[in-house]
Structure formats: C-alpha cells, structure tokens
Image 1: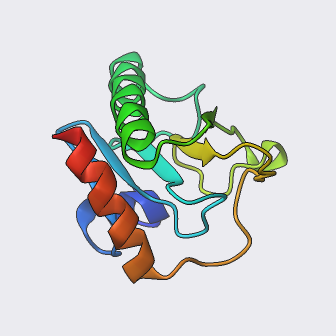
Image 2 (image 1 turned 180 degrees about the vertical axis):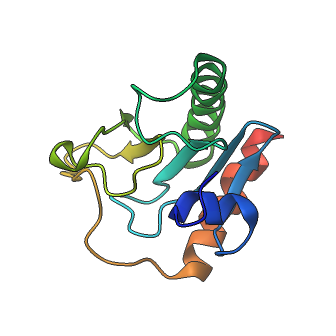
Length: 137
C-alpha cells in the first residue's frame, strides 16, 4: 500500500467508503460517482497501479471477487445486463492509479458512461449496498 493512494486509504479505513464485500485480499465498495445504480468497484488490497503491475495472485483474487460481486449485483438489482470495465493509465480513463474493476449494471436503453458525473448521496449508496450484501449471503 502507498500512503497517498486514495484506494489504499480506503483499505486502511482512513477514508470512508460504502463497503459491499471484503476478504483478506480484496475489497468491493460503491463508486461515489456511479455510472448507474449499483456501480461497484472491486480492488486488490495490495497496491498496484495497473494490470501490468499487479501480482498474479492478487489479479486472480480480484477477478474471483469481481465475479462473486457481479453475481450479487445481478441478483439484487436484476439489470438487463452489466458491464465490466478496467482502465489502465489516465489516457485510457483510469482516474485512480490503483488496479480496480468497475461493475456497472445496465438497463435496456440506458446509455451509461464509464464514470458518473455527479457524486452520489452516501445514504442512497448504502441502501443499494445493503441489497447487494444481502445477495452475497
């Protein structure tokens, strides 16, 4: 972990996040600028900026957690589909230089971007997160 990385600070509990799932290797939490309702981020806890830097065991753990959380998002919110995004480098749209995966539920006819433009209300994020957490059990 690095001292200045936003996501490392979330892992350490220095910055609040609406957590959905956590294990020894990964953390899933609600995106505060959601592209759609239920937009969830999955990170590997050890710091690695991009796919090219992440250690294989951490990548495998993040991928397994992404699948598990995507299933829960799908069950809890019943979207018509979902998008899995992963960006590498600012030019590609990566806004936080810590390996992470976006789970973005999509409704038929919805045109959701990679990132939302407005900050979500934390209380509203918590309501959605509770539904996803319930589907994880």
